[in-house]
Length: 97
Image (cartoon, rainbow, N blue to C red; front, side):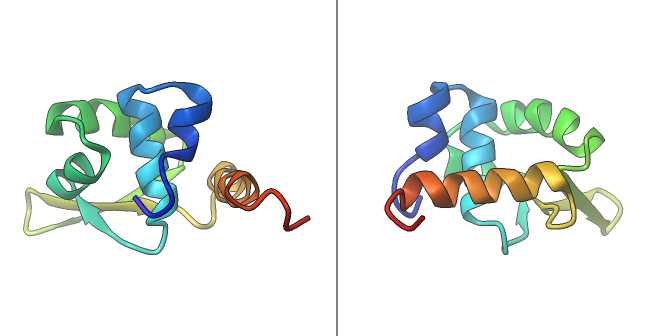
């Protein structure tokens, strides 16, 4: 991760927090399950479990291709996702107000 796990430092070291941290920090990147798991340092099954509610809330978008393959990214149109990005930017650069 770019500057350290900001959300993990604040909200604790759980798979969902790690996943959100990765999704926000790589917000302009689409990733498949194994890449998300590797970057978040959690198992693929944990990523699958954590992604489900994030997709239902629209925070994460998924794109299906080749029948079984899916890629994921932070949904830039979702207001919660936008707030998460803004929040991380503020805590990573607190003097930029």
